[in-house]
Amino acid sequence: MRSFFVLMVFVVWLAGCSSGAAPSSGGPVDASDGSTPDGGACALVGATYDKTCGTAADCLMVAVGCYCGAEPVIGVAKTAQPAAQACESQAEKSCALGCAKTTGHVGEDGQNDEGTGRNLETLCDAGKCYTALAP
Image (cartoon, rainbow, N blue to C red; front, side, top):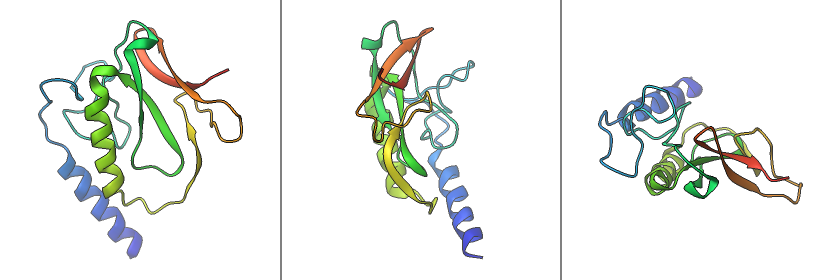
């Protein structure tokens, strides 16, 4: 019964997070190609932020706020980073997943930096920012 209650709270919170309107600048916006998020909601479940880039210098990292396991870190466009980080910080405060978190950070390449002595880095490939474990 407790897990059902937690799930319902999460669903209600998630529905309330979506504003349906995109911010005017620097934040998540709708896009038909799926590369940017769903009209202003935190990228909490499968959505992403603006990832448009020309070079890796156009990208910054954002730590995902609500997660299980090692902390996911995503690459976003510099212009989207302030709004994305603010949204993820709010998601962290409201997270009701109730699962264990572990040490380390996971890039979008699926690699965990824990114990490797290497850091995640932002890259730009095919016009999209992403994070990967540095060689």
